[in-house]
Amino acid sequence: MKLVRFTEQGHTRIGKVINDRVIDLSAVPGVSESMRQVITDLPQLRMALEKARGPAFPLADVQLEAPVHDAQKFLGIGMNYRQHAEEARLAGIPIPENQMWFNKQVSCINGPFSPVVKPDASNKMDYEIELGVVIGKRCRHVNARDAAAVIAGYLIVNDVSARDWLHKSPTFTLGKSFDTHGPTGPWLTTAEEIPDPLNLEMTLYVNGELRQHACSGDMIYDIYAQIEYLSTVMTLEPGDILATGTPSGIGAPTGRFLQPGDVMRLEIEGLGHIENSVVAEAAQP
Image (cartoon, rainbow, N blue to C red; front, top):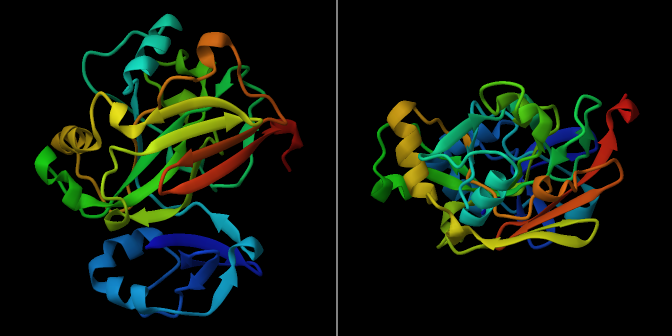
């Protein structure tokens, strides 16, 4: 299934996408406005969700929202593609010897087609396409060979980064967490629809120009190793979002940073696409 949060006539609710239509699931018993709660209850709800057939709306007539707007954790791994690690090194960021994780504060979560604000405080705002993994079960101490069983599904993450702010504190958190700098979507594609998440083509365009192009299988640490590593430290909860690393092609090495008016389009095979325009902070209400 492709589970989505959408707004129609000012009312936000949960649905599923079939072809070019959104099926409203809000009448299914047990479905609230929280995707995190739906993910938690998915084993019990799945049959009813799959059978639901209406009401339906054309995708073009609704506004798609961040699929999991109420995630408890939004975590990202740095320099997890070999070529990207090398370009980061050339930009002055040392290559880590182990998995390097950081927080994106959940207040940065943004919709799949919502604008991204370029802060007045940053002159080095950058794009990063990432495969997002959404946890489906409360878990701790998960072995990599069992990690697939705790994944609810996948989505696209635009890990927007203020590069100048990455160096202003001992962790990446500030540079990764400006408001609007976490677009996700376009929907949550449940795990059974993606038989091999380590073989997905990923592309990112800025103003129609291809900037990033890779396969998710090029990760240094695959998604299962990531879950094992994280769950050694912390309990992972349904709805937690893991941004699993970006390939090479970011703007930092060449100084091609984002400016108001730029448009980013991110596509991952099997997951659809998201698109975010850049706006100036002063342009916001």
